[in-house]
Length: 152
Image 1: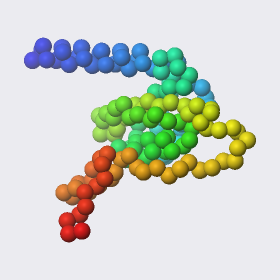
Image 2 (image 1 turned 135 degrees about the horizontal axis):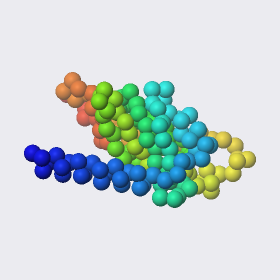
Image 3 (image 1 turned 135 degrees about the vertical axis):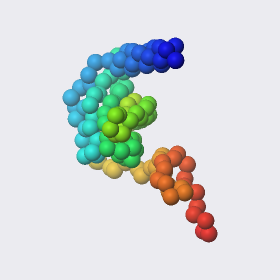
Image 4 (image 1 turned 90 degrees about the horizontal axis):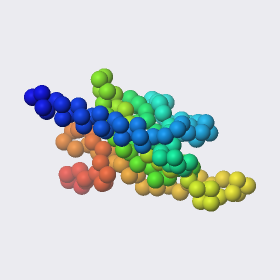
């Protein structure tokens, strides 16, 4: 029993050290402000940091009221036109059952965003990457479309 606990503790320490090594210095205020503006009201962005000395790749850590809020935030980041390559690294539940998360993303290159003088155009509508379904009376989130209801 003690050996299992020690193995678990060692794994936990290694994963925390990896996360600390991955995140670097804090992100510039304008990037942090843009990321927080895209966040729903029930989501808190706790930390935004550069990854491995990059000035384009960021790690975001925060908390939300539920998983669906994190999903909404991921979609807002992807469709914002300012960020891309959004990747949810992990979601964990705290002692109160509230999810905390880590997201990795990159700043959209200036060339792709276009010149500042160009007229603003809304981002193209994208298909959702997460589907909210009710299966056997339970609400679930999945990456494939929801199955058709019986009799349809």
